[in-house]
Amino acid sequence: MLISELQIINFRNIAFLRAAFAPGLNLIHGPNAQGKTNVLEAISLLVTGRSFRTTMDREMIPWVRDTYEATLVRARVEKRSGEERFMLTFNQSEKHVTINGNPIGRLGELVGRINAVLFTPSDLQIVRGGPAFRRRFLDVELSQISRRYLFCLQRYDLALRQRNALLKMHQSRPNLRQELFPWDAQLAEHGAELIHARQRMVAQLSQLSASAYNRISGGSEGMKITYQSQTQPGDDDDIGTIRAKLEQALAKTQAEDIRRGATSAGPHRDDFTFLLSGRDARDYGSQGQQRSCVLAMRLAELKIMEDATGECPLLLLDDLMSELDESRKRAFMECLDRRIQIFLTATERELVVSHVKPDMIFHMDDGTLREDLIAS
Amino acid sequence: MAEKFPEPLERLINELSRLPTIGRKSAQRLAFYILKCPREQPLALARALEQLHERLGFCPRCFYIATGELCSICADPGRDASQLCVVEEPQDVAAFDKPGAYKGLYHVLLGRLSPLQGVTPEDLKINELLTRIKDPMSRVQEVILATNPNVDGDATALYLSRLIEPLGIRTTRLGLGLSIGSSIEYADELTIRKAFEGRREL
Image (tube, rainbow over all chains, first blue to last red; front, side, top):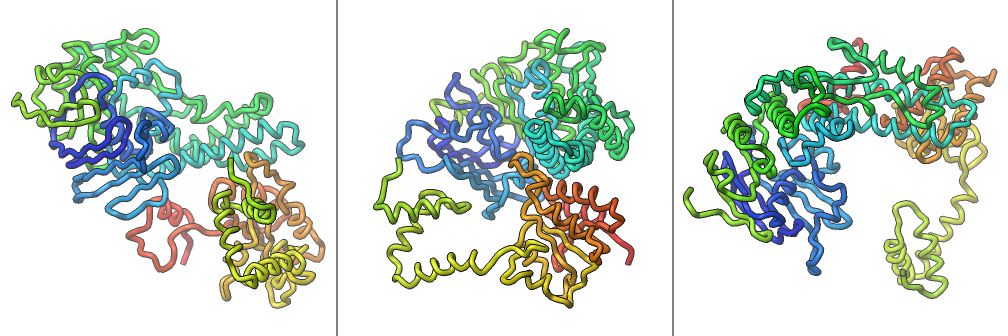
């Protein structure tokens, strides 16, 4: 899968951008705060309908242009099945998406049409941050490759909010247990699917990232990723078994949940851990090791996504070069599959061209993107 | 601040903006439109509004709309009183009640469970439903739960099934799946999954 052409109008500091990209490595270089990441953000908007930097659409619209009408991001995407055209427009009050000229009703229908793996400096939070970062990573990942997962996630989330509302606002109701039942039943039904899918995803990630980790870090620590759930599913549990366990867990914690006014068991509380030689990388890993963990996982993700969709995903690498030391940089570049279309941002072109030859080089200057004509 | 108009117009705008999906802007547009209309049109609207509550109400048995004592469905002796179809809103009855599709009776809950919006069982016509089923004169043998197939609708159906099943009455959930006349080729993955779950012997 590749983006052959991209057009951006009124997006952050980009007033107008139109560019054709190469199938392989596309380097976008320029000093900080010129708009390099904005290009990646615009692309990822077409992937998920949402920004990876903000939950506020308002932040993405330019703030000093009084003639502002709307923001537009448009792309021609070449897939194995043929070319597809995507267009997303939004302003303060509306958001619309069309695919091949046909409007789609819900943003959720966009998810999974373009597959991309994104690496940003804040990815370090997946190793170092709280469990919410890691759950979000899995949810974004799985939603892209499985509509069923996205459906279960949305249903689980709503049932959870309803159950918590019941626990918080109606604690003293005489038939509370009876009224919790229909929400518990739905949490168990959809939650079991989430746990099952995440568990298999983590196992796959663990298997695939182990070798990538050693290649990037040049070490032999033996990286592993393990899923932790209070529901304690076995490795070979089917969905029905997990569902029964989740039902039991919800029943067991019900009295406590009523007291606390919140739901304590379920996939919304699960987590996963990076292990290096059996020790938690969050507590014991160096920053370099932690970065290697995330990168190795992103590479594993690329492979999983390709297997699941039959398409080679796009790879969006934001400011990767400043994140890695020399040997890791070189090793990572060697890991990259040249069939993949890559968008790489860097503060200086030399940081990249000294390691690898890009197929196209662009310079970003104050929101304006120009192709470098200097032969490298 | 929104500008103020002469009192009669302002009052109309306020009343209109209390309707669902109508904000102040839309209310203003409607109000100015009504002002421009020939006198007969708004008067006809006013009469229609006035008569709505005077001549219509909810059926005391099933809570569908009724013009007389009972609604037209409850008053129809040709209906099969052994089947009771439970729906969320009166407009759902209108959607289900197509000739030849279903001959039984209905019960309208007038909503769905949603703790987030403060809707709990006593806000719905659930007690009325149970009283109706438990009535010694009742001929109900099957309760068909036809709430919407979303999280709140499913929760409402699950809650009801727990209350009704102990009474020894068959409870069923409306089937989900492929729509008739559509091509299987274009059905999405979730619809197909539901269709498989709901398969039956031929």
